[in-house]
Length: 196
Image (cartoon, rainbow, N blue to C red; front, side, top):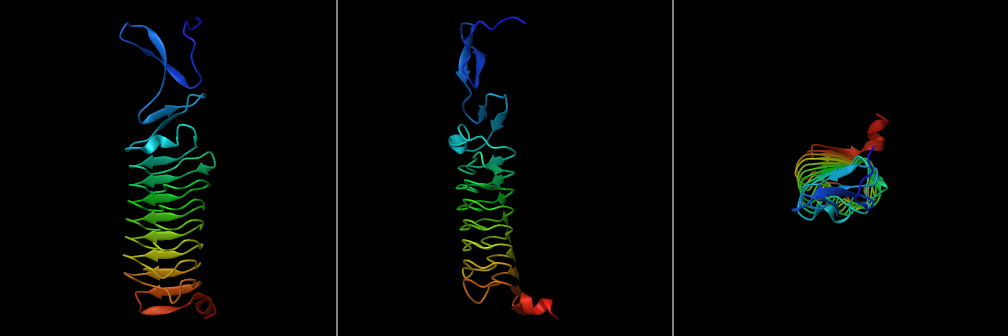
């Protein structure tokens, strides 16, 4: 194998210039490459601000200012303006829609679908928000399910294990846990319902 006549910097590539000579350059724009040859492609204005120095595995980010890939984040999917914008650790979170999981810094297994779903969630896990603004005020809590436009409204902030279905289905207090509300027609404590 012939030796390359160009001194190549770590994580750079050789590109032909206007004089038809190979030159050492760093990849730029919407793609980066690491020293193992792994290429990361991100689409969206301002998307690659952190990916260049904080490569993560199995992450996909599409949209302006979405995702904040770090070495400790894996299996993240973000689609939409500022979705999963503050994540620093955790994994397997899915955010589809503008502002989904916008302030999540950690947590695993959260799914947000709809503009601002799980918007303020910081550290919870296993939460599912389906619908515009579903679970949008929840900051911490685990295993909540909200389906519908603004399901859980603005009330729930720290509760866990709640199931709410229907537009503006809500809970009694900001820290309610183990509560069921199906369209306001069926409501109650899920611990009580389990014993029936």
